Image 1 (cartoon, helix red, strand yellow):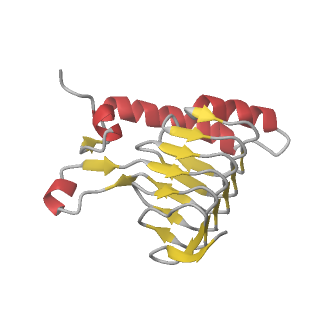
Image 2 (cartoon, rainbow, N blue to C red; image 1 turned 30 degrees about the vertical axis):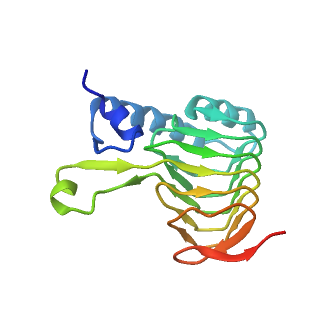
Length: 186
């Protein structure tokens, strides 16, 4: 039996992003995000309901300040106490697991999606995606970019403007482009 484009996407294989199933799921997410991003600070209950419908898992005390954007939503697994400030984006073409008590400053970008480097494959319209895992008690500074396939360990802080292209272990402060460990935490 041939695998669906969604199955290929979630397994890290080349897939066709404009597949009808994926287009339908993206439209669903766009509709929910349009409603979410139109809410006011007085509509916390509605925000919570919309995130419950959008994400695969939403922990308690989750707060995402609009505007927020994602591709599908149903590949995002958020733990308790997630806070995302203005303008965050999650390209969830593969799974994004976010631990408990993760804090994201404005404009944090989490990208599972990427394109082939070979022009002939890239021009075919096929894309790739790799999962991202963010541990518990992580702080991600403003405008940081988390690239496909990255894992960030527990109790780690990522400096503002960092571009995280490789795994970052637990209990460190890391920053820069490319992001690197600058301090070990005790």
